Structures are given as C-alpha cells and as structure tokens.
Image 1 (cartoon, rainbow over the protein chains, first blue to last red):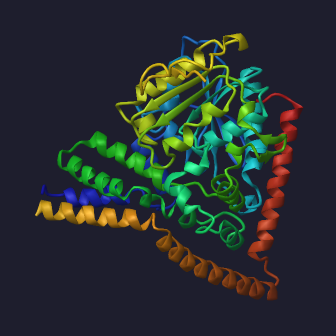
Image 2: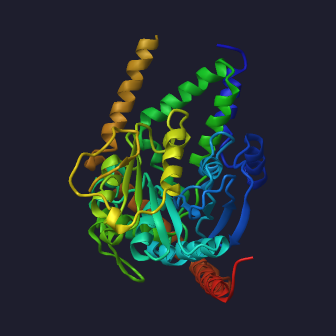
Image 3: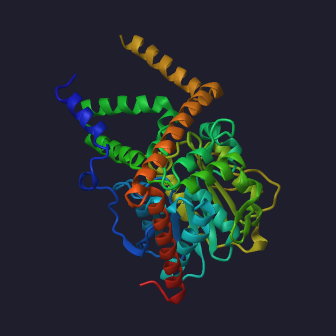
Length: 378
Length: 87
C-alpha cells in the first residue's frame, strides 16, 4: 500500500458529507461543478429556470426545457467540464433551459405531484415560451422529471412540440426493487406523511437507495482505492462530483411522496390513464407529438420494463427509441455512451416536425439494433 | 487472502440482495419503522402541548403559515406571468 492512500481515501469518501453551506460551496467550486455559464430567467421559492443559449450554428429548433428528477439536484446535467449534458446540447445548436428544483419546505407538505405538474412545470414552460418567443417547446424529463414531463405533455399538447423521456418510469407495475418496497402490504405511505406532514427527512426517502445495488457500493469504493494508488486525479474528481450528486439530496414534501407512492407505484395511475390533473386525467394516448424514449439497460432505479412501454401507449407521430447498454447515470455521464446519447437527443430535437401524414405505419421491423436511435414503428 | 475476501464479499452481497427482496424481512422492517413513527408523533404532540402553554408557535402552526406564504407566492408568480413578459 502506498503511503497516504488510506488518508486520501478517507478524505475523498467523507468529502461529500454535509459540513455546512460554505464548506459545500467550496467543495463545489474546487470540483468545478456546474461549469457552464447560465442565466437565471425565473426565480421562485420552489424552482428556478436557467438558460443556456445555443452556440452557433443555431438550428432554429424549438427551445428545449429539461426537467430533472424531483429528488436530485439539477447539476447532474452540468456536472463537470466534459461531463455536461447541457453544454453538449447547446454546442449542438439547441437553446437549453433547465428547471432547477429547490427542494420542498415544510409549507409544501400538502402539495401532491399533480400540483407540481399543473403549477410549477406549467409555469416553467410558460417562462421558456415567453423568454424564447416560441409558441411551443421541446420538453425533456429525466427519471421522475420524465414522468412529470410525460403527464404534462398528455394534458398540455398545445405547448409541447416534442418530448424526450430520459429513463422515465411510466409503467410502475415493473418498478423493480423500488416497486417492491412501495408495495401496499409493506409501505404505508399515509403513516409516513402523517408523521412528517411537511418536508420528509432525508433518511425516509433516501436511506434505502444504496441497497438497490449493494455490489455497486462495494465496487465503487474498491475502484476509488485502485485509482488513488494509480494517482488518477481525474477519476477521483469525477468520483467526488458523482458522489456529491448522489448524497446531496433535495427535500421532498410529504404530499409529493404520498402521490409518488400511492398514485404511481401502488395504483399505476399514469399508465392506466386515471391520474387526475387539473385538465382531467393524463392519458398517454393523448400524446401525439414526436416522442423520444431514451432507455438504459443496466438501470437499477428505473428498470427497462418500467420505461419502455411509453411508446407503445402514445399516439406519437414520430416515436423514437434509443437504448443504451449503460445505467441510470452513466447513460448521460459514462464516457462510452454519453456522446451517442447527446447526439441522439440533439438530432431528435433538431429534426423538422413531421406532418400527421408522415406517421410511421404500425407494421414493419423495429429498425436498427440497440444503442442506435430508431424510428420505432408502432 | 484475496479469494477469501472475494467469497466473503459475495456472501455479504447475496445475503443483502435476498434480504431486501424478502417480503417477510421488509414487513418486519416496516413494523419497526412504524413503531419509530408512532413514537415520533407522540413526541411531536407532547412538544406542541408544551409550547402552546407558553404561547410559542408549534411546528404545525408554522407549517400552516409557510403553506399560506407558499400559496401567496404562487399566486403572485402566476399573476406576474399573466401580466407581461419575463425580464
């Protein structure tokens, strides 16, 4: 063992632990988190909207609003230089906006997920439309943000030009281990919400996440040790940045949690078309715009079977599927797959919208193999 | 030594993976959690009663105030968007 490796290992592993706001900001700065310059175009207690203007050549494509997962910080989409989804998309000529959730406070306890869709997401879309002077936008949602984006598109078709679902669960019957833990016989979400009527403590929501794949927890520490011995500082910085992202959580309101467990995991209301929003139930069949479904084969959090049925249910004029062999996060950050993912999304967003007559026929082959964007016939 | 460690790791991971999928284990875990939740609720109630004796706002009252302020902010934001374009 090299001298000093153990000390450095402990320093790196402990660096993501919460040590107060100034210390965390200093850590963000030292790692170069969120390096892409951005403009705040909207700011309210629940969320902000950031703008990343297109880098020439501008394509004339509709502005793209990205909705990250409700439970994680947005900066995974702009993690570090060379690992930034927003920078990659703006470099490909897209004007990118990001809805940055701020986490719930105790007063947001009563708000259920439909209030997030009809209130916050709708407002963010309106902000982007006005800021970009565009009648319609492209909407991309990641993970639970994708689920919200899907429900929004189903009920607000007049404002969404095309939809990108990035590892977004829609069929919660196949929710994997999270689905098992959310089973009605096991989890009584109402008791939890009654105990914590405001914002839920982190331990309630995130405590079990490392158990989704215990081997990964061991492997990542082992790899970190090996990289410290090899003095691979780039890897160590990326490890710290990713670890920070997985340990720095957003607080979740009890109403949003209750809605996630009861409406989605236990009753599968979105997939069944019975999830009531302000304009009526969100029905996937009502989504007619071009839809791209980006899937990760090794996803522990959102199994393939939970995300894949989206295209089968929508009435999209242009259903496109992109299957990556990577995992939930490595899909956008892994060195092997990220360029392909970014290219696929950018191509989809830049392509001219097809007329209804151009809609693919229901019969025919599935197109190219995995990892390649395919215009998936329905 | 490394083979021994590897088999120990495999045993640990496979046991854990089985446990987190076993509904009996999960059920027992939730029963424990529910007991903790019930204790937490009782302590909250006792704390609220004690604070009320001194006229100090309880957590529930503060939540209500925050919820009201949140609602006001949302109405203002919605109104602001209706009024005119974003700066």
